[in-house]
Amino acid sequence: MSAPEKTLYDEVQELRSRYPVSRSATLPALRLAQERHGWLSPEAFREVAEALEETPAYCMAVASFYDMYHLAPIGTHLVEVCTNVSCALVGAQQVLEAFESELGINAGETSEDGEVTLRTIECAGGCGWGTVVALNHRYRERVTAADVPAIVEEFRSGG
Amino acid sequence: MAAEQFVVLAGAEEQALTKLADYREAGGFAALETARAMEPAAVVQEILDSGLRGRGGAFFPTGRKASFLAKGTGKPTYLVVNADEPEPGTFKDREIMFRVPFRLIEGCLITAHAIESDRVFIYIRGEYLHEFEVLRDALAEVHKAKLLGGVTIVLHRGAGAYICGEETALLESLEGKRGQPRTKPPFPAVAGLYASPSLINNVETIATVPKIVELGGKEYAKTGVPPDSSGTRVFSLSGNVVNGGNYELPMGVTLRELIYEPELGGGIPNGRQLKAVIPGGSSVPVLTADQLDTPLEANAMAEAGSMLGSGAIIVIDDRCCMVQLGLRVAQFYMHESCGKCTPCREGTRWMVQILNSIEEGTASQGDLDLLLDVCDRILGKCLCPLGDAAAMPVASYIDKFRSEFQEHLDSGCPMGGSSSLEGILAPVDQHSHAPVAEVPA
Image (tube, each protein chain N blue to C red):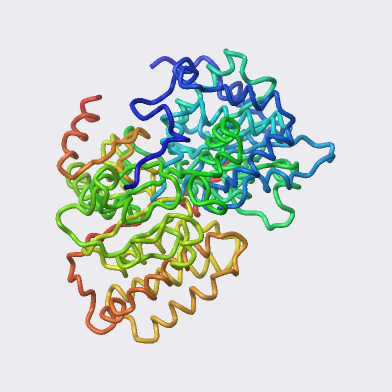
């Protein structure tokens, strides 16, 4: 992958210009910083705070409220299994256990090679088509435990 | 026999209408032209006449909400579309966005005209990446076709927080802050986004507006169960049912029809028996098998002791332990409590703790009453509806399935490890309130 042409600073300025009050760009700016750094590292907070003309502490206070910001490093691939009621009723626990055994890690952990992070999430909004698994933020629906080995093989082989 | 009736999802029965040309061929943007030839107040009047009520869950009359907007403040008026859809069981707004994105945009433009606003924000939940991309591309096409008429529509992505579906928390989040609800008053109609008059409506509500303009409010109000439940709703059906999915039906169809008709839910799979139904998202009181003939409309649901909420019907078969269900629901609301007010922040933790001990068999007889007492101390005592959303369903599980709770106290979980929810995990690894990253120097 080639380096992005625009700097984070420039991209954040473009975001700020979309809003009547530039602080509104905080959430999208944090997302951009996370995409560039992989997680919201101290360095990422420093950069995004400078671009937003906020303090790093302000940015951390906001980021720590939301589930989608990573305050610790995560794997190259992110596997998220919805375990809320609708998915739970149709076997989310079995799907989660299948991922745990296939990947050799528990929910909330990252594999030793840093390749994959597995975590459970609250309702993803695919309730009628459960179990919902978000693979790098792309939804897979009606996932059963039997589907799990193929899904893991797919992203392990770079699919 | 109940049959689907397409208003919001019209034209997209076969395939998604994600190209402007296709949407126009299906009659799209004709209503916008009609509306723009009308006085703004006349458009609001049509919405009032239609009886349309908010489809996000609160069911507040949409036309009245619009008419509350403060005038002559010297500040701009904003339209904010709530596309956060966080209520467990609900996935209708998502389908509306990926199937008929242009109808949502057309609804935005009509509503903006009605309230004389030129600034629209669509707050879409962060997890909805595909839907964001579909909407973004649709907006680009609308912009290119010069249909915006001077209105700016900004797509704003959330970042994962249930509470941001509450309108004032959504505004805080949109302003770049932690998504904690505001005290009301002032109401958003007076001081909303950037302390300016703001109208906040759900995706499905806004996507209904083009049809109201097309038919006229009075004509629209003839469908469903007027005057309080006129029109259609996109019901989200999930859980232990053969055909999970979204079904757009006139209000007044019964739960039994939705769950059992072959063209709709198709019944309960694997020959199981229905045990309970959650009729409006996980925050509403549960109904039992003997209440299946309740029509899906506001007044009948209220009489049955529940609510239509976000229109999400979760079907639960006889393998489910109600204590585990209560625990899972309580864990969710505990996880999502924003922490601002005490009854919710502390109460949801108490609920989880007590439910845990009941499930584990370590609770005493008094704990059941203690749990109900905690629910009572949350209900109606919080800044926003999240506390109620935790207390109402759990209190209803005890009310309707008291003997099952009692069995837990007497001799442990009667399911003996075979419940469909056995071992289910709530997220344990999110919301790091003590961030591991150090504050940079």
